[in-house]
Amino acid sequence: MKYRTIGTGPHSRRVSVLALGAMLFGSTTDEKTSFAVLDRYVEAGGNFIDTSDNYAFWTDGGQGGQSEELLGRWRRSRGAGDEIVVATKLGARPLAPGTSYTDNPEGLSAKVIREASERSRMGVPPARA
Image 1: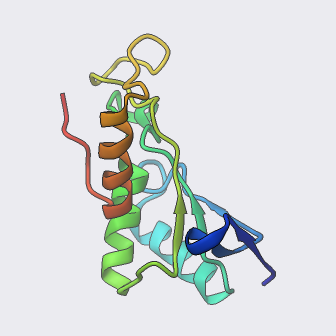
Image 2: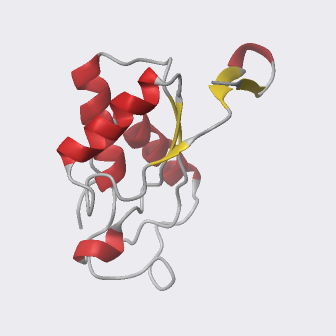
């Protein structure tokens, strides 16, 4: 696996050049399969996983968060810490189940950024409306 450094100074991180997209983990890709893919990716030297807190609100009329919740369960079950870098996106989680990020987005207030970043880091579900 090849690696690159992202960021500068004390917050720089060395990440694998191949990131693993986790969009459907915990929704259309079941937990057993998702865990197996994650395990194999890490065995191959990967440490950079992409997700978003609105993945996959469209699969069940929900608000998203399934991918990040699954990543949290996987990290805890494997004892994975900061060596696994999770790149997330936020601000587009629908505020209510069954709505869309285009008509009812969570937005990018300072409070949302703090709360969504912490939820992503911990792999915990957002409060459901």
